[in-house]
Length: 115
Image 1 (tube, rainbow, N blue to C red):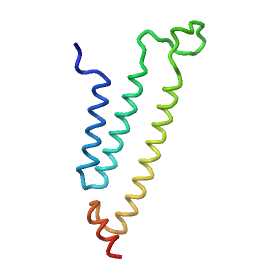
Image 2: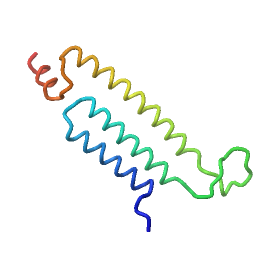
Image 3: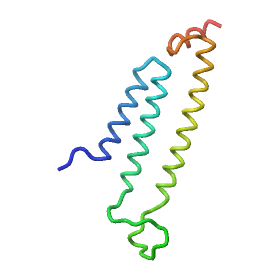
Image 4: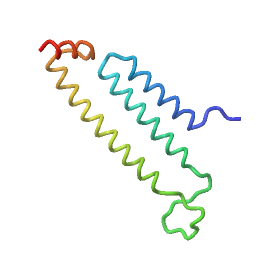
């Protein structure tokens, strides 16, 4: 019985990211935690679809053994979306940091509410 599998690692990564999102007060740490959650979810969905012995669907005539390309294409799309969300999040963080001078969620929220 194997306890360290890619699916178990992906679930651990997801919950580590979730812990970081729920507990950390620093905006950068929250962004990194969301990225860890994203990576864990992508890894889980890739490993769930993995079939040992499958072949790439390029130029092959053995339809039964071909890997399904749809989940792989969706995961590539998810990776691109994750990178885009990270870039936008960091841009918003830089703007907040320049305006309020802090990376703490609570301090930023207090300063916004004082207006």
